[in-house]
View 1 (spheres, one colour):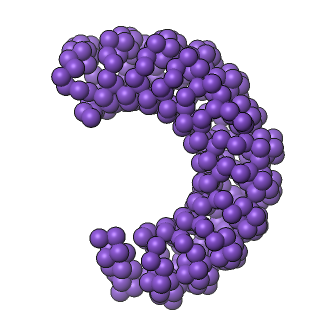
View 2 (cartoon, helix red, strand yellow):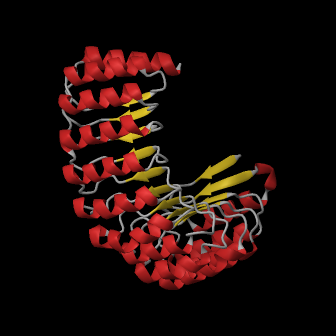
View 3 (cartoon, rainbow, N blue to C red):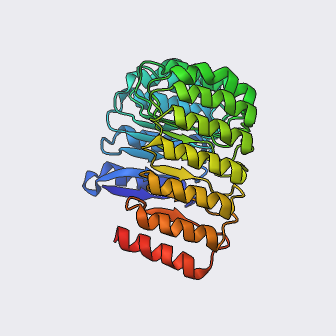
Length: 363
């Protein structure tokens, strides 16, 4: 596969004409095009789409941060209705509002090849999510990113309900959507009943301990989720207790990211105890959580008794005592290949020993 990367190149009209020639010449075998951050606006975006209509090789198109607007979103929607090649489309940061979203949503059920759609950091809002939702069940999408769109709990609920029992969306990114704990309460029932999403990102949504109670109860009932990202929320020690309880109840979940949640030693120890009971947990991220040697010992115990293959603890307050516990646990757990302890208080002697162990293990 040949990738044409023209990100942040300040493309002129002449450059776009040359791009057209490159796309038309199939001997170049260009299957991926990245035109991010080129200020293409309406005229530039229209030219790119015109060229793509004549090309049946491009499988990945990245148009992030071009301020394309609703007019180009409408033109893209028309392209999607007839295109049988494009599998990945990235449209982050393009000032797409509800009009553009309505057009894109209508086109999705008519396209049978598009698998990944990134609409992050546009201006969709709750109404945009409501417009998008009906087009999802009959689409071919397996991955959908709606981060940074202010769709809140109500919009998230609509998205989850639309793919409750049908559709193919397995990865759903709802990070930075101002959901909050009240919004979590709105979407909890839809999350508990959703049977398609296996990986869910709810990072940076101001979810506190109260929201964690509702969220974790929903995840406990969910039968599809395997990966959950909750980084940069406000769970704290109490929220971590809810997470620990959820891990005991839901043995299907295998990966969890709680980076930056101020869970402290008590919260980390509770999660470590839950992982020991879990039996099949694979990946845990607890970076930047004010964890010291005390909780590191508990995490080391969980590492020994579980099939954990990745443990991220960067940016905590772990010293040589905790580092030594983790080194010994890593020695005993042959499946562990990632142990991130950067920006702690561990000496070079201990950190070098951990690095050598994992380097030798992974070759």
